[in-house]
Image (cartoon, rainbow, N blue to C red; front, side, top):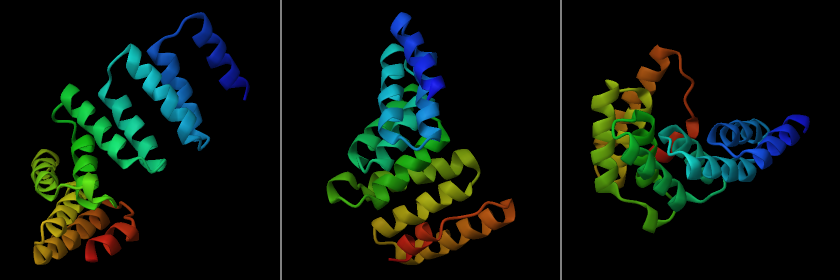
Length: 170
């Protein structure tokens, strides 16, 4: 609470992107997605930053605002076109969004293939590719790719979400 007050005092005296980002990170660590988002967006108004667009997108996802999260990933990619985490996460969202208006299987597939090429088939890129295959109806490829993602993650010592694999099987 004391750190929040100090950041807020500093921002009243002299608003700057770095302080907004630091405050956003503090709120994020404390689980306050709304306050974190507000501060990431304030930081972005002062200074475009692809990483802060990623962070804002994560907060929007946590708040269930998928369409806005997609927009933030797109903004990050306009600033840094080969930002692999943004490509992976955008592909995943476009393939798995609950609302049909937020899904685009063809675009998800294109992005996931690009993420796989740029990341040398990271588990996250393969997960996005599997989801994209599923969204465009290429189910056998989705299953093989999902298993490949799981295998790569296990070899890398990464713990993977069972939820992702459950959704890929649906």
